[in-house]
Structures are given as C-alpha cells and as structure tokens.
Length: 270
Ligand code: ADP
Image 1: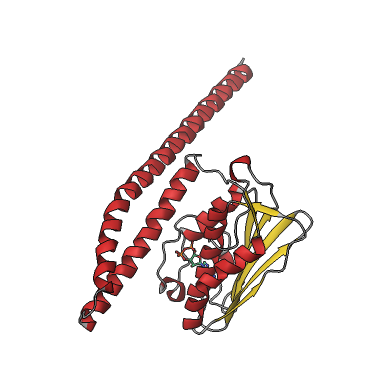
Image 2: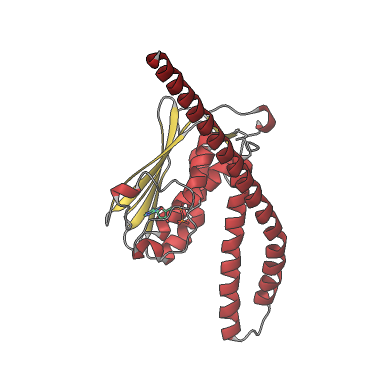
C-alpha cells in the first residue's frame, strides 16, 4: 500500500510540476507578445516626430551663411537623429518578424552585382577611416532569388559593423555559390570577439564588454536582425574570430526561387 501511495504521490507531484511548467511557458509567451507589441507601438509613435525633427534640421543645414559652430551642432543633431531613426526602423522590423507578419518575398536577383553595389555604399566611409575594402563577387553557378530589401539590410549591417569595429587594415566581402547555396562572408582585421562571446553576438541587445567595443556607438540589435532576416530565407549565420586579429561573419542561404508576388528581375542598383 505504501508503495502504491508513494507512486500516486509522485505521479501527482509530476502532474503539478508539469502544470506549473506549462503555466510558466504560457506566461513567458504572453510576456513576449506584450514586449513585441510595446516595441512596435513605441517605434511607431517615434517615427513621425523623428521625421519632422530631421526634415527642418536638413533644411537649415542646406542654407547658406550658417555660423560654423551652429553647423557642427546641427550636423551632430542630425547624425544622432538618423541613428535613432535606424534603431526605430530595426525595432519595427523586429516586431513584425516576431508577430509572424514578415516573410521574405523572393525576387530573381543578380546577387553578385547587387552585393557589390551595396558594398560600394560603404566604400567612402571605410576609406575615410583609412580602411581598404575588397569586393570579390564573381558570377554564381545558379540563379538566385532573395528579398532585396532584406538582403540589403543583411549586407549593410555586416559591413557597417566591420567598418565600425576595425581600426587598421581592411575589410573583404566575398560571395560564393556552391551546388545548393550562396555564401556571403564579410571579413575584417578589426578588434575581434572573445571566444566566449561568439555564441552571444547574434542575441538581441547583446554587446561585447570591453572599452574597444563599447567605445563605438551601437544598440546590439543589428546582428539579431541579420539572423532573423537570414532565417526568413531558410538560411544560417555564423562567425569566427580572433581577438586583436579580426572577425569573419558568414551568411548561407539557399538559391531560392522567385515568389509569384515578386517575379520581376531585381536590378543591380537598389
Ligand atoms: P551594435 O549596434 O552594438 O554594433 P550588433 O548587433 O550589430 O550591435 O553587434 C553586436 C555586438 O557584436 C557589437 O556590440 C560588438 O560588440 C560585436 N561585433 C559585431 N560585429 C563585430 C565585428 N565585425 N568585429 C568585432 N565585434 C563585432
């Protein structure tokens, strides 16, 4: 009898533990939904005032005869406003991905030309920082189809990080096609990432500790967004790094086929 009673008690205990675990998972999911809705609402509310703030700043900056001190101050204000605008846009992208409302609309894309074009956007910034930028994007063995807006975010996020976290040397962007996938790699000779941080850098809001990394402006959201956008293409992300020597970020996506909604060839220029 004692044995049976023991078994009943343990079964009851298991059932209770199971129920508690189920409730915990449910409330976590609920919290996640609330967080996403909150991000989305706040981002939405910030968008219009930010646009109305940046418009006049740009107009004043375009005017002649501004005292040099005022021009510098306004330029600083605009740069920070634009930074906030990027964060707001990233948060809104995130919210719609989390709400399951985002999907990649694949368009037949000349990926080597498009990727090289995007790298060109950051060339001036890299060179101003005294860094070289090498772009190696030969033709692919198969046609590729990606969501161009998403691909643009992926490439620009990885490249701007490479520029941001590199002080000497340079950056290399490579695109390669295997039998069944396209691989993009962005390598830099920058500050690198400690091995224990490697599994964390794609997590939302994660920034590596240490003065070198923290000296740079950032939000810790760029790589998390990259991972989500790549996942929407059925792809994967990866990183290898050596502190003090540099990092290589890689993105692998299947070639994909154009979706019915977006079957026009995407031009190389965005
Ligand atoms: P952030 O806005 O902080 O740059 P990200 O999500 O893009 O956010 O990157 C997360 C963190 O990963 C960064 O704060 C930085 O510590 C590290 N990191 C990202 N890219 C690089 C890189 N190319 N070299 C060194 N560290 C990097």
